Image (cartoon, rainbow over all chains, first blue to last red; front, side, top):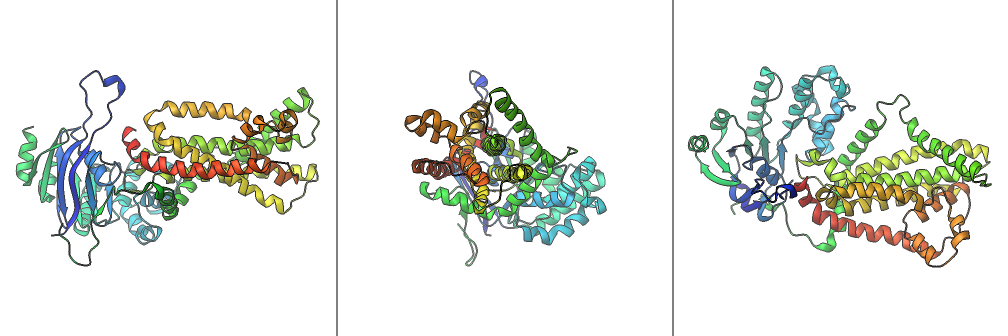
Length: 228
Length: 286
């Protein structure tokens, strides 16, 4: 199978704020991580809060640079995180969809081709062309997840974005993410929904204090995580 | 590494880039991100006066109201007898505001946009650039407050007037490059933003807003004072704007122009190198 992403000895240490330097407090980064993501694979990442899951995803997306080690990617990568972040209350739903798409690295033509699909999925109807400040928080979430899940990169990174909206929309979002997983080259997903991860992942890695403590079978990974 | 023939190769996300290529990379990245840049400028322009009843009229009213205050101070209290003094002040305020806003918004561009570049790898310079372009558009709108003065003082448009947007570009470009140099440091040491705010306020008095080039020349003449004054990157462009609008011709020495353009070009080279080398790591500090 073709490698979509190759990570070797990846390390990132967060700077320690001055007031904490005397204490032995050390913010968790990631330490000496090596892994490969293959085409067609769904890789899960689990770990306790502060174990370095989101940091690793941000490094895989190219947002954070490593202190040492290397990351190589074949094709495009985008990260689904913080649905609705970047939306502007004075822009319409449509304008926000274009802006959010561009922030995800998409071209105008790509967004043009998907805008009808985004509008239909968000179920906003005539509200789509009204300013965001007239939206309820549920409508904003629907717009966010609709734009975020519209594109199919070669490597899709998902960071806990499936808990927004009402119950029926959450179910719809999960279905959409599953569809994305089928369409995308490979997926790396961070979630605390262990059942979902066991169901969809081919492999799971368990992170603790920025280190990989287990990598492999999803059932074993979840057992390892629960014993931490 | 396993790959099939004809497939795109694995590309390092953080490959080594030559020091000298960075200014070209910044320009290329911005060109490629022009769609995002346009959307960000539209967002900023929409949001700027969206809650105000008078909307964009504020862009015209701000320099006009400030000019009324300064003209009152200088014409009535200090006895300035130049009939065009109020026009000169308005031009100075528009130019200075553009410079000040360009420096401050570019300096805090990384820390204020941290949430916006977490989805994909997009050039971080777009946020500083979009805010500067927004300020440029607002400065162009502000210029319309000069229209009544063209009738009052019987001024006329000439070929020279076309230079006004060019001088404004030079002003915001210089502010942008200064911001690029400082933005990574501002993430690490937030006090830099406070320091820049202070320097911008102090710089108001050192720039030709309430005084003109001729006033300075009459008082200090040639010499080290003049060289020092030309180190301020707003002196030549603001004077150039006044000349372009009022149809005057101020005798700025050739070294003045040379210093002004050199500061802009060297600032771009240095700013793009510092930004590209330091900004990515600085994000981790925010």
